[in-house]
Image 1 (cartoon, rainbow, N blue to C red):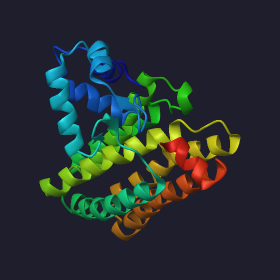
Image 2 (image 1 turned 180 degrees about the horizontal axis):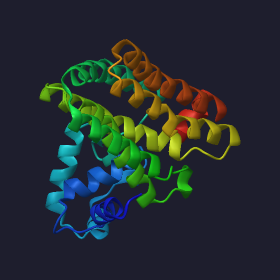
Image 3 (image 1 turned 30 degrees about the horizontal axis):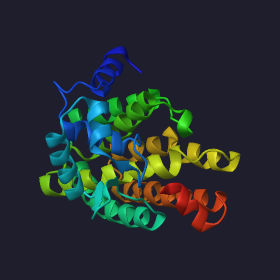
Image 4 (image 1 turned 180 degrees about the vertical axis):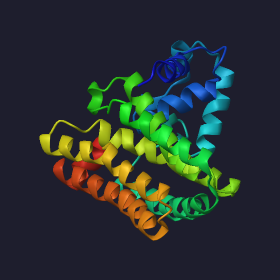
Length: 253
Protein backbone atom coordinates (compact mmCIF):
# COMPACT_ATOMS: atom_id res chain seq x y z
CA UNK A 1 0.00 0.00 0.00
CA UNK A 2 1.44 3.37 -0.98
CA UNK A 3 2.67 5.62 1.81
CA UNK A 4 0.25 8.53 1.32
CA UNK A 5 -2.81 6.27 1.18
CA UNK A 6 -1.72 4.45 4.33
CA UNK A 7 -1.11 7.69 6.26
CA UNK A 8 -4.50 9.10 5.27
CA UNK A 9 -6.28 6.14 6.82
CA UNK A 10 -4.09 6.06 9.91
CA UNK A 11 -5.01 9.71 10.48
CA UNK A 12 -8.70 8.99 10.01
CA UNK A 13 -8.69 6.15 12.51
CA UNK A 14 -7.32 8.12 15.46
CA UNK A 15 -9.79 9.08 18.15
CA UNK A 16 -9.64 12.87 17.82
CA UNK A 17 -12.88 14.62 18.84
CA UNK A 18 -11.52 17.84 17.32
CA UNK A 19 -11.80 16.38 13.85
CA UNK A 20 -14.35 13.56 14.25
CA UNK A 21 -17.82 13.99 15.73
CA UNK A 22 -19.39 11.54 18.16
CA UNK A 23 -21.49 10.26 15.26
CA UNK A 24 -18.38 9.72 13.11
CA UNK A 25 -16.60 7.81 15.86
CA UNK A 26 -19.51 5.53 16.70
CA UNK A 27 -20.47 4.98 13.08
CA UNK A 28 -16.93 3.95 12.16
CA UNK A 29 -16.55 1.54 15.07
CA UNK A 30 -19.93 -0.11 14.50
CA UNK A 31 -19.41 -0.62 10.76
CA UNK A 32 -15.84 -1.91 11.23
CA UNK A 33 -16.88 -4.41 13.90
CA UNK A 34 -15.23 -2.83 16.95
CA UNK A 35 -18.62 -3.12 18.63
CA UNK A 36 -20.17 -6.53 17.96
CA UNK A 37 -23.82 -7.00 16.97
CA UNK A 38 -26.03 -6.92 20.06
CA UNK A 39 -23.32 -5.32 22.22
CA UNK A 40 -24.59 -2.73 24.75
CA UNK A 41 -23.58 0.87 24.08
CA UNK A 42 -23.45 2.49 27.50
CA UNK A 43 -23.08 6.25 27.62
CA UNK A 44 -20.55 6.21 30.46
CA UNK A 45 -18.29 3.74 28.64
CA UNK A 46 -18.56 5.66 25.36
CA UNK A 47 -17.73 8.93 27.11
CA UNK A 48 -14.60 7.38 28.58
CA UNK A 49 -13.60 5.81 25.26
CA UNK A 50 -13.98 8.86 23.05
CA UNK A 51 -13.62 11.77 25.45
CA UNK A 52 -17.01 13.13 24.32
CA UNK A 53 -19.80 14.31 26.63
CA UNK A 54 -23.09 12.47 27.02
CA UNK A 55 -25.27 14.89 25.02
CA UNK A 56 -23.56 14.50 21.62
CA UNK A 57 -23.34 10.75 22.21
CA UNK A 58 -27.10 10.49 22.75
CA UNK A 59 -27.69 12.54 19.61
CA UNK A 60 -25.29 10.29 17.71
CA UNK A 61 -27.07 7.15 18.92
CA UNK A 62 -30.42 8.57 17.80
CA UNK A 63 -29.02 9.25 14.33
CA UNK A 64 -27.50 5.78 14.16
CA UNK A 65 -30.86 4.29 15.10
CA UNK A 66 -32.37 6.08 12.09
CA UNK A 67 -29.73 4.35 9.96
CA UNK A 68 -30.65 1.01 11.59
CA UNK A 69 -27.14 0.55 12.97
CA UNK A 70 -28.25 0.63 16.62
CA UNK A 71 -31.48 -0.25 18.40
CA UNK A 72 -33.02 1.04 21.62
CA UNK A 73 -35.13 -1.01 24.01
CA UNK A 74 -37.20 0.39 26.90
CA UNK A 75 -35.24 0.24 30.15
CA UNK A 76 -32.36 -1.52 28.34
CA UNK A 77 -30.56 1.36 26.67
CA UNK A 78 -28.81 1.21 23.30
CA UNK A 79 -27.34 -1.81 21.57
CA UNK A 80 -25.64 -2.45 18.25
CA UNK A 81 -28.24 -3.78 15.82
CA UNK A 82 -28.15 -7.58 15.41
CA UNK A 83 -27.16 -9.30 12.16
CA UNK A 84 -28.39 -12.50 10.54
CA UNK A 85 -27.93 -14.54 7.41
CA UNK A 86 -31.52 -13.77 6.36
CA UNK A 87 -30.90 -10.04 6.61
CA UNK A 88 -27.62 -10.37 4.74
CA UNK A 89 -29.41 -12.16 1.90
CA UNK A 90 -32.01 -9.39 1.81
CA UNK A 91 -29.34 -6.67 1.79
CA UNK A 92 -27.40 -8.31 -1.01
CA UNK A 93 -30.54 -8.73 -3.13
CA UNK A 94 -31.32 -5.03 -2.74
CA UNK A 95 -27.69 -4.10 -3.37
CA UNK A 96 -27.59 -6.19 -6.54
CA UNK A 97 -30.65 -4.48 -7.98
CA UNK A 98 -29.27 -0.97 -7.37
CA UNK A 99 -25.64 -1.73 -8.20
CA UNK A 100 -26.45 -3.25 -11.59
CA UNK A 101 -28.53 -0.21 -12.56
CA UNK A 102 -25.76 2.18 -11.54
CA UNK A 103 -23.07 0.08 -13.19
CA UNK A 104 -24.85 -0.02 -16.53
CA UNK A 105 -25.22 3.77 -16.53
CA UNK A 106 -21.60 4.28 -15.45
CA UNK A 107 -20.33 2.04 -18.25
CA UNK A 108 -22.35 4.03 -20.78
CA UNK A 109 -21.16 7.42 -19.50
CA UNK A 110 -17.69 6.89 -18.02
CA UNK A 111 -14.58 8.30 -19.70
CA UNK A 112 -10.84 7.96 -19.27
CA UNK A 113 -10.83 9.52 -15.78
CA UNK A 114 -13.47 7.01 -14.67
CA UNK A 115 -11.39 4.14 -16.04
CA UNK A 116 -8.26 5.47 -14.32
CA UNK A 117 -10.13 5.74 -11.02
CA UNK A 118 -11.20 2.11 -11.25
CA UNK A 119 -7.66 0.91 -11.96
CA UNK A 120 -6.25 2.99 -9.08
CA UNK A 121 -8.92 1.73 -6.67
CA UNK A 122 -8.26 -1.86 -7.71
CA UNK A 123 -4.53 -1.36 -7.11
CA UNK A 124 -5.20 -0.12 -3.57
CA UNK A 125 -7.49 -3.07 -2.90
CA UNK A 126 -4.84 -5.50 -4.19
CA UNK A 127 -2.25 -3.93 -1.88
CA UNK A 128 -4.49 -3.96 1.23
CA UNK A 129 -3.78 -6.86 3.56
CA UNK A 130 -6.80 -9.12 4.02
CA UNK A 131 -7.92 -9.08 7.69
CA UNK A 132 -8.58 -12.54 9.03
CA UNK A 133 -10.64 -13.17 12.16
CA UNK A 134 -10.12 -11.29 15.40
CA UNK A 135 -6.36 -11.40 14.81
CA UNK A 136 -6.84 -8.87 12.02
CA UNK A 137 -6.36 -5.67 14.00
CA UNK A 138 -8.61 -2.62 13.80
CA UNK A 139 -6.28 -0.64 11.55
CA UNK A 140 -5.97 -3.52 9.09
CA UNK A 141 -9.74 -4.07 8.98
CA UNK A 142 -10.54 -0.42 8.40
CA UNK A 143 -7.94 -0.03 5.66
CA UNK A 144 -9.30 -3.09 3.86
CA UNK A 145 -12.92 -1.92 4.23
CA UNK A 146 -12.03 1.52 2.85
CA UNK A 147 -10.15 0.02 -0.11
CA UNK A 148 -12.91 -2.48 -0.90
CA UNK A 149 -15.72 0.06 -0.76
CA UNK A 150 -13.68 2.59 -2.75
CA UNK A 151 -13.31 0.03 -5.56
CA UNK A 152 -17.05 -0.51 -5.82
CA UNK A 153 -17.67 3.22 -5.60
CA UNK A 154 -15.20 3.79 -8.43
CA UNK A 155 -17.07 1.33 -10.64
CA UNK A 156 -20.30 3.29 -10.14
CA UNK A 157 -18.90 6.81 -9.96
CA UNK A 158 -19.83 7.84 -13.52
CA UNK A 159 -23.51 7.00 -13.00
CA UNK A 160 -25.92 9.93 -12.83
CA UNK A 161 -28.45 9.12 -10.10
CA UNK A 162 -27.49 10.65 -6.74
CA UNK A 163 -30.56 9.07 -5.13
CA UNK A 164 -29.55 5.56 -6.17
CA UNK A 165 -25.99 6.21 -5.03
CA UNK A 166 -27.32 7.32 -1.64
CA UNK A 167 -29.42 4.17 -1.26
CA UNK A 168 -26.45 2.09 -2.37
CA UNK A 169 -24.19 3.68 0.26
CA UNK A 170 -26.69 2.79 3.01
CA UNK A 171 -26.81 -0.81 1.84
CA UNK A 172 -23.03 -1.07 1.62
CA UNK A 173 -22.44 0.04 5.20
CA UNK A 174 -24.95 -2.56 6.42
CA UNK A 175 -23.29 -5.22 4.27
CA UNK A 176 -19.89 -4.28 5.70
CA UNK A 177 -21.24 -4.62 9.24
CA UNK A 178 -22.35 -8.13 8.36
CA UNK A 179 -18.94 -8.81 6.83
CA UNK A 180 -17.28 -8.03 10.14
CA UNK A 181 -19.67 -10.16 12.18
CA UNK A 182 -20.09 -13.14 9.86
CA UNK A 183 -16.73 -13.35 8.12
CA UNK A 184 -13.89 -11.68 9.94
CA UNK A 185 -14.73 -12.94 13.44
CA UNK A 186 -15.57 -16.54 12.56
CA UNK A 187 -12.31 -18.15 11.49
CA UNK A 188 -11.55 -20.81 14.09
CA UNK A 189 -12.16 -23.62 11.61
CA UNK A 190 -9.86 -24.23 8.63
CA UNK A 191 -12.89 -24.77 6.41
CA UNK A 192 -14.26 -21.39 7.42
CA UNK A 193 -10.93 -19.63 6.86
CA UNK A 194 -10.81 -21.05 3.32
CA UNK A 195 -14.29 -19.67 2.64
CA UNK A 196 -13.34 -16.28 4.07
CA UNK A 197 -10.26 -16.00 1.88
CA UNK A 198 -12.38 -16.87 -1.13
CA UNK A 199 -14.94 -14.21 -0.23
CA UNK A 200 -12.30 -11.49 0.14
CA UNK A 201 -10.05 -12.47 -2.77
CA UNK A 202 -8.88 -9.78 -5.19
CA UNK A 203 -9.36 -12.09 -8.17
CA UNK A 204 -13.14 -11.89 -7.80
CA UNK A 205 -12.90 -8.10 -8.14
CA UNK A 206 -10.37 -8.26 -10.98
CA UNK A 207 -12.76 -10.30 -13.09
CA UNK A 208 -15.45 -7.62 -12.70
CA UNK A 209 -13.02 -4.78 -13.41
CA UNK A 210 -11.71 -6.31 -16.64
CA UNK A 211 -15.19 -6.71 -18.09
CA UNK A 212 -16.32 -3.26 -16.99
CA UNK A 213 -13.30 -1.59 -18.60
CA UNK A 214 -13.93 -3.60 -21.78
CA UNK A 215 -17.48 -2.12 -21.80
CA UNK A 216 -18.82 -5.65 -22.19
CA UNK A 217 -22.15 -5.03 -20.47
CA UNK A 218 -23.85 -8.45 -20.62
CA UNK A 219 -20.69 -10.17 -19.39
CA UNK A 220 -20.03 -7.45 -16.78
CA UNK A 221 -23.60 -7.72 -15.51
CA UNK A 222 -23.25 -11.49 -15.19
CA UNK A 223 -19.89 -11.13 -13.41
CA UNK A 224 -21.21 -8.59 -10.92
CA UNK A 225 -24.27 -10.72 -10.26
CA UNK A 226 -22.04 -13.75 -9.75
CA UNK A 227 -19.68 -11.72 -7.52
CA UNK A 228 -22.48 -10.74 -5.14
CA UNK A 229 -24.32 -14.05 -5.26
CA UNK A 230 -21.09 -15.93 -4.56
CA UNK A 231 -20.69 -13.84 -1.40
CA UNK A 232 -24.10 -15.02 -0.22
CA UNK A 233 -23.23 -18.64 -1.03
CA UNK A 234 -19.98 -18.30 0.92
CA UNK A 235 -21.85 -16.93 3.91
CA UNK A 236 -24.22 -19.88 3.80
CA UNK A 237 -21.18 -22.17 3.76
CA UNK A 238 -19.71 -20.37 6.77
CA UNK A 239 -22.91 -20.82 8.74
CA UNK A 240 -22.96 -24.50 7.83
CA UNK A 241 -19.31 -24.93 8.82
CA UNK A 242 -19.98 -23.32 12.18
CA UNK A 243 -22.21 -26.33 13.01
CA UNK A 244 -25.97 -25.90 13.44
CA UNK A 245 -27.79 -22.83 12.10
CA UNK A 246 -28.84 -21.82 15.59
CA UNK A 247 -25.29 -21.91 16.88
CA UNK A 248 -24.00 -20.01 13.87
CA UNK A 249 -26.68 -17.35 14.29
CA UNK A 250 -25.68 -16.98 17.88
CA UNK A 251 -22.06 -16.36 16.91
CA UNK A 252 -23.16 -13.66 14.47
CA UNK A 253 -25.12 -11.92 17.19
